[in-house]
Amino acid sequence: MIRCARLEFFNPMLRFAGSRREAFNPSLRLGWPVEWVKNPALLPLWERLASIAREHESVLDVLRDEPGYYKLVKKKSPKTFDPFLAICIQRKHVSIYLTPLYYHPHLVTGMPAILRACKTGKCTLRFSDEGQEAIEHVPHLLEQCILAWLESGMIR
Image 1 (cartoon, rainbow, N blue to C red):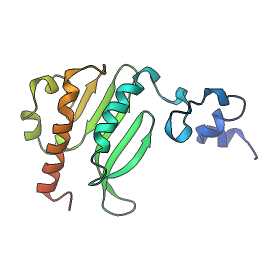
Image 2: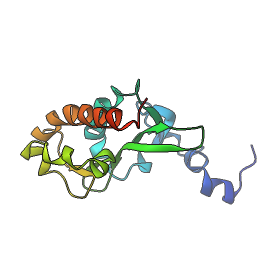
Image 3: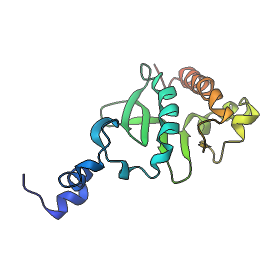
């Protein structure tokens, strides 16, 4: 295999292959190295939130599922889609970016106070600990968001 600096820059798999094979964690899907994740200590929290979101893959389409980044969308065509949810590991927290909260503000008013306390932006929820009580309310919130998209015709 021919290796060049330009290819290694654009493909992280080439950058970490070879002499640094021990950096790969075999428990991670797709073989991405742990160094790729901003904070590997938050992987259990990310996995818990992503497993909640994976329950809705029958209705929505998975755009990306890599350790530290999970994205659900509703595809209109092979190249266009409406973003629904993204779960990303940041440096000190895991964020859920939930687009329906932006388009349907009544979902925010119906949120439990403990979950509303995690809201940091118009459609962002921030979690820093796997034991947060607010995580228990995320499945119900996702169901409400899917129902809102069904009623508005975004999901057919």
